[in-house]
Image 1: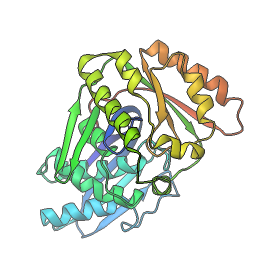
Image 2: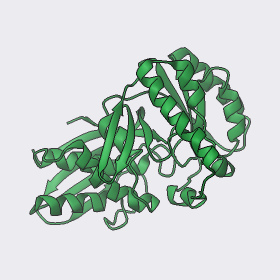
Image 3: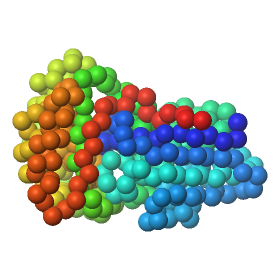
Length: 306
């Protein structure tokens, strides 16, 4: 096999209570990536439908991932990477993570599946470092593993796959503005109040427990962020209005990744549809254009098309 085409899904990171460690995979939107072995060295990147993304391998998240794998494999050839970008850059639902994870997954398939999923996350983090200025795996892990994941450690890398509840649906509210992860991270005060830290890790523990026990009431209680979200609120247009609109039918609502997208987790498709409708009643009256997405949890992660 010298060519592969894959669907690479979007994802939600942080999930309010789990900054940089918690994430889950979405069914849609997805990027389509085709990666092909070429007979010459180096990496060629082509973005079919998004002119704002650099194609120079030094500045594109795919570049360092591919080059690191080439060096590790002592591979004599290079790769052509073509991306149909359906996950908007700077949307907060893992656009850069999809490209980095998709590159690692595809090259692994084309070269004999030498690497484990954990190793693929390690490679993909080299790409995320370009996008955010730091290595983190909360978006990458659910894309590669599927479902809900917890990043227990980066050194050494340790990812825990969590149960995915079939009744969970997600509404994504995406204001059509771009917010770069690197910029959003600059706002964060790295010194935090101990009392707030206790609340945060208690909620993270409760969230994980709710997935194992299928306790939707507990899950709802834990979707709160007392540390990061208050610092980023000013970056998210009409955030409180959207949270209020979602509150009647959703289990919980928060900032997706670095934003500006907002996620609302719901029990059952009907509640998700009602949540989406309530949010639309708000967003239709605002000056900013919004894209609303309804998705299930994707338990498979990246899928091979051809």
